Image 1 (cartoon, helix red, strand yellow):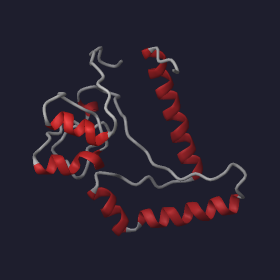
Image 2: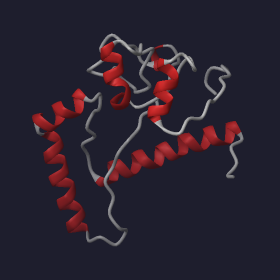
Image 3: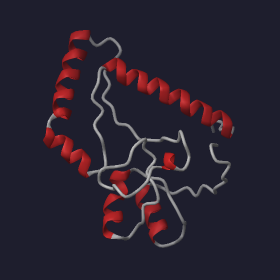
Image 4: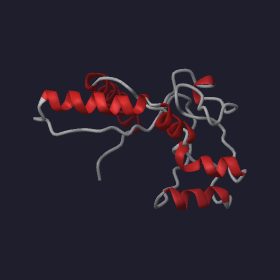
Length: 150
C-alpha cells in the first residue's frame, strides 16, 4: 500500500513450514517475528533484510528498519495482558504495577532483548490507546486491500 509493490502471498501452515520454504529457496522472502527467526539469522541460514519496528532491534544493530527506506512504515507484533471488562480498578492497578515492575527489572528486560523484543511499560490507558491506534491503522489496510471475511 505504501510503496505500490505487488507481491504474491504464499500461505503456509505456520512459521516452521514458512521458514523451511525460505531456507530451501522455495520462496524468496518472508515477514516473521524476530523471536522466531533470530536463531536462523545468527546461524547464517537466513539473512535479515530489514526490521519492521520503528527503531532498530538491539540484537540486529546492523539491520535497518523498513522505515529508513519507506518513511512511516511500522509493523510490530504485540503481546498484552487483558482482564475481563468488570475487573475492579484496584485489581487492574495492582496488576499493572506488578507487571511494570517485572518489565523494569534488568533481568527480564535482557531476556526479552535477547529474543529481539522490547518491553512496553505504561498504564492500561496507554496500552488501550496503542491497541485503538493499531486497529485504526489496520482498518485502512484492510479497506485498501479489499479484504472480505470468508
